[in-house]
Image 1 (cartoon, rainbow, N blue to C red):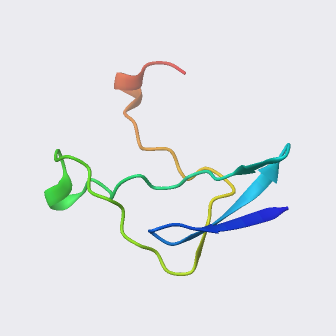
Image 2: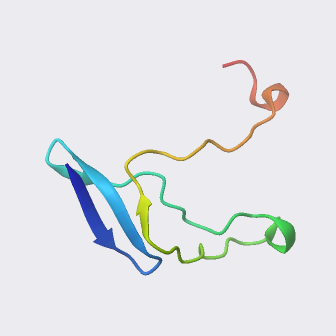
Length: 70
């Protein structure tokens, strides 16, 4: 069963699991690209429509040589 809420950044659609409303993959900051790289985080931009928060987003890229064996 889906559950929907409104935040300051836009609407989110999550899921109900074991009696709880669960929201995954919600951005906590703007992507650190361009002038934002190596700077303190900025708030994420607002989104239009309803953002699907029923599952996690993609994992951040990592260098296997640095991360080590899995």
